[in-house]
Image (cartoon, rainbow, N blue to C red; front, side):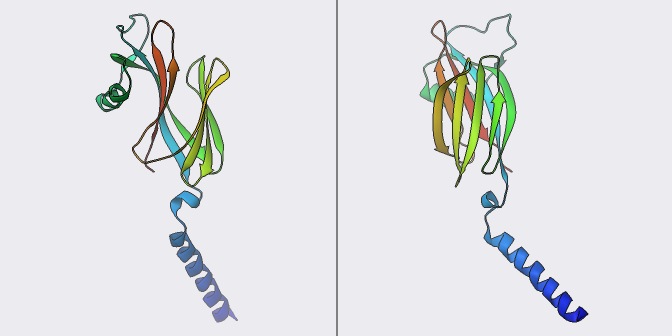
Length: 153
């Protein structure tokens, strides 16, 4: 009896190991992690009374390649982890909040709220190293952007 139980246990462990190899990590309960940035675009100079940071050169190049602003400043940045098949909210400022929902098959739905109101709702396939960029017009001929960059596990 002990011999057959141990054979059964070994077979069960082998089967579990084999199934883990057959199921891609994205379906095996992993999470999606993003580096989230709130960025302000303007043709003006950085206000001296606000703690804004320069946007890194790689992101600056991407933004300038698509948008018209001369200067881009990071207002805030935070990590965000979204459970598989779940959702997560993140407050970036008093006026800006996002919610991400995992739709499965590497697709995410992003909801961007400005001053408590839904501004943008977008579903997109997450591609490694490719940021998801959402934005809108600001005051005085400026713009703001929320950039979600996938973080490799």
